[in-house]
Image (tube, rainbow, N blue to C red):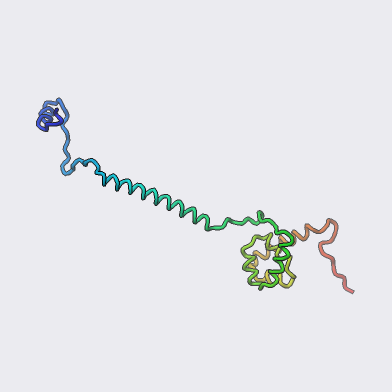
Length: 162
């Protein structure tokens, strides 16, 4: 009953029988939300959820745009027929074009492709590649060619002069 009558509530508060309600000047209690306000709040939550989903989708698309890194050790060698066909195609291309292509390929594939080219073309391609890459390729190529030589046999046949 004291809640309905402000005079009774202040009299009871003066007698210390009830706590006086503190009134903050300038602050009015917020009315119950209207249906329009509830609809706007629901739309706001839906927009926030949609925006979060769009950000997630954008991140997924960015991840798909970038090709997976190629590990030189995981690259599978080409079947012999394909390697020969690629070698024939590469033989028709300029050394600069081949250097740009080989610059994006893993070492084992470049080595396999270089072995399909004649020595002159392979030398031109190697000359167009960066020197550190050429050094690495040369080292790997000589390791492969030395590994294929039977033990006890010389790595290269010495030339004899008459």
